[in-house]
Length: 107
Image 1: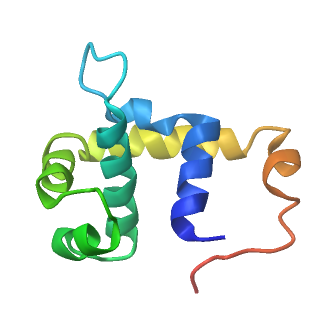
Image 2: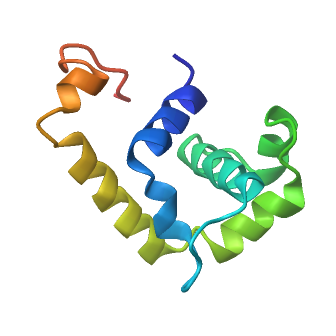
């Protein structure tokens, strides 16, 4: 599975992008959610915005920059990560994502 596919699957299951919404915002535009996921992936892979623009068709640099500056705040990242940790610790997590006998971890 490609890392982007996994990130999209986790977003679809847990909806962690809600933690990156602005106060009072009930939903984000789909292109902003795509840019958010692309930016998270770029950050995790230590890729710059220009490189991510080249490998993520349809996600322009200016949108990646906007998401990076206005949505990918440290507090938002903390709450989103807590949501993901909570989601994967659910009793039904193994039924959804495997029994944990294999890993694609780093190091």
